[in-house]
Length: 145
Image 1 (cartoon, rainbow, N blue to C red):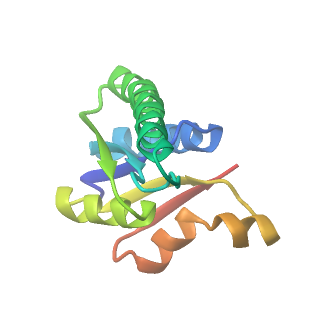
Image 2: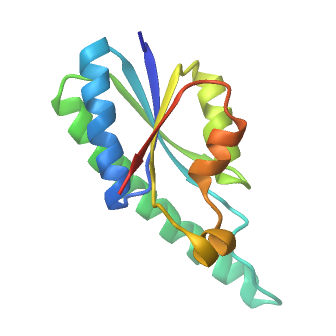
C-alpha cells in the first residue's frame, strides 16, 4: 500500500514515537523510508557585525542536532531491516521543506509527530504539522504526544 514513507524528525519524544509508527508501517508494507531534518537557515535574526558570527553558530548547532536526530532514527529503522535514506534539508519554511522533499522523493505517505500545542503557544509558535496537513496532497499520519 505504501511504498515510500517520508519521515521528518526533530529529535523530540514525539518525533521518536513517529519513528516507531513509521517502522511498523514500513515493515508491514515493505516500504522504503526517507528521513529528513529540516533547518530554517534564516531563523536566526541578528543585527550588525555580530550577525555573521551568530548565524554561523546557529547553523553549526542546528546541523549537529540534525545529525544526531537522523542518526538515532536511521539506526532504529535499519535495525528492523528497513531501507533508509537520511538527509538534512534547508528551507525557509519547515513545512515547505517537508512537502517539497515528499514530492522530490515520490513519497506516498508522510509520518510525523505533532507537539500538540494549544492556545497562545500554537498561535505564537505555529504548527508545522498543521501546515503540512493544510498543504499536502498525499496521506499524512500525525503522531501526537
